[in-house]
Length: 275
Image 1: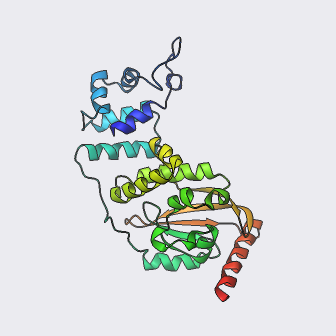
Image 2 (image 1 turned 45 degrees about the vertical axis):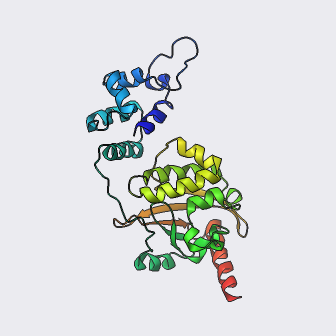
Image 3 (image 1 turned 90 degrees about the vertical axis):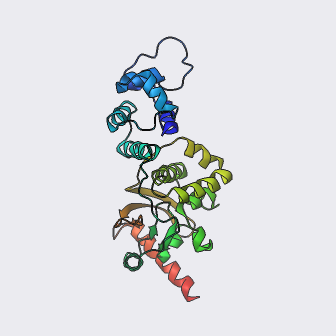
């Protein structure tokens, strides 16, 4: 919690919250402690204790005020409250650390979504199951053993990812921001994945230290696929009932060039199966 507040304080300037910047160059990046404390309506001493980790149980009212002062999004605000629960010894809900298999019903649903590429993911974006088009869309993912298949690991460590994702920087930032949201519900899995990726990728380590937090709920992704060429696909992330499993589905409207490309992708998968 303390580190999260320090990072976020350093990333918002006085002008963004209506404060004068004053003459000369500021030695402190972002807001000073006393500025943030004043905006949130708490004493500088009290806020300093929070940021130094000496106050582990600030009230929700104080945390709400800090969230407003720091211009946190709803996802970031929820993350701050969850961090405070852990700091105060109120253990957040935790699921078993072992990788759970995709539920049978979700596996059946994957097949019904074809030719749309689709995946069952857990909280840290392990690929628990995918339909054939899903494996084919993320070029090279199917060559990894199932236990290694993880969308965030793929983004940072697979050599095909930087070419496949036309907007790689945005995809990478989305993955890291989502991973922060899983720190409290899947801490062991997050810690292991963060240690691995931080050691292997300086870009991941830098993004992780930014403490950006948001929940991906859908959007559009631009691909440069080695077999079916460039295409832009809409995606939806569908939460399931309380076990941390989610479905990521890519789709295109029938009659569009993108849908034709997905049909072609399905045909290449079928041809490979027939060989």
